Image 1 (spheres, rainbow, N blue to C red):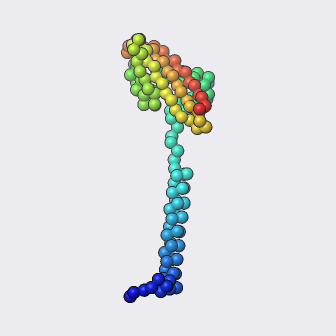
Image 2: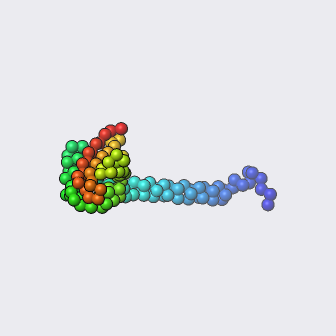
Image 3: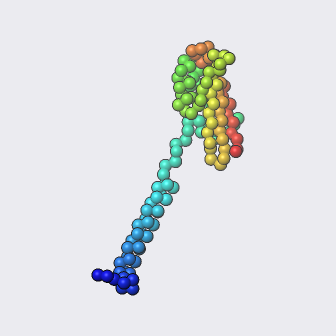
Length: 142
């Protein structure tokens, strides 16, 4: 069974090699098509809670956010649910070390088209209860 190089190029060997290569190429194309469709058709990330306000723009978004936060957490309500909600939504909240009666919360989010949304919310408290919430929404292009 010592075959020379020329004897290995018999028609039946070439046909088998061609069929094997064609099969691998077809499988590769199918895998590529499936992979590209799953990447394109994959569910986009759900919109963040505060994207509604960002889409309104800086001025209208600030007014709508202030109205909604003050309706949901009016003056005199417990502070903890408000801070927890803001932190769950992506805000970083820190107590002002100079005044324990104030929390500064910041939210940053990359948006499509190189936009960056930033919400600064100042929460005034009496230590345990909300006194006022003042958000400021800025949308800038990077």
